[in-house]
Amino acid sequence: MPIEAHTSRPWLIHEIAPDFRIEDVWSFRTPGAGPDDFPVMLAALEASNRPGKTTWPTRFLFAVRWKLGAVFGWDKPQAGLDAAVTSLRDRLPEDLRRCPGHKDPNIPFTPVYQTHDECVEEMANTTAHIVCHLGWVATDDGGYELRMAALTKPGGRLGRFYLAFIKPFRYLVIYPALTRRWERAWLDRDLDKKVHHDRES
Image (tube, rainbow, N blue to C red; front, side, top):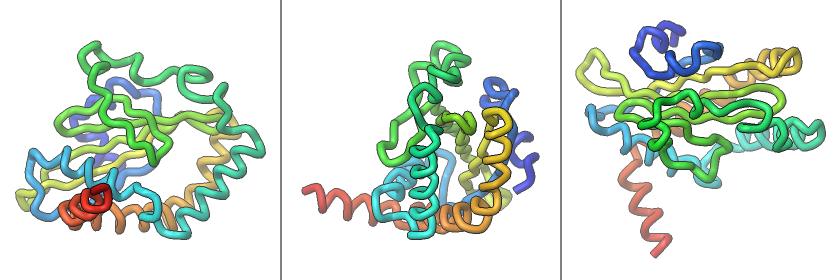
């Protein structure tokens, strides 16, 4: 989607991260969704992040990325949140600091805040400080859809080069696979919850 699809919304993220660059804006179809279904969608997304749910090209690309990070030291603790960079949570009003949202153990993001229609998570390493913003938006047909925006603050020249280098991979591999998985997660939300419950039982 165009950048304006994100900037035109009255999101809180605009106030707390004005110094971040908006890289990508995507929408995800959630047929039949209502105004109060944002937490339902977030739970479905977490279920879709369990091991084995992602496609092999996506797993391969991330495996390569983590390997390179280990070799070049991109992901060392000294380059992470509250070390090299300050968490966005420090910019929040006190009431929202107490509502960071749920930590998904299967993704390397840390919750920042969650409201009735926004969920923000962040991660940082040598290459960039990255923010994932999820929003719940009313559609023209009377329904609702999920929107995601990726915001970044590059870590110097290396970060700018890295973000430019991975852009084709994001558009050709990561985002198409993510769209299919997240839209399927909404459609299968009740079935997936039942299967996971049966397995734990």
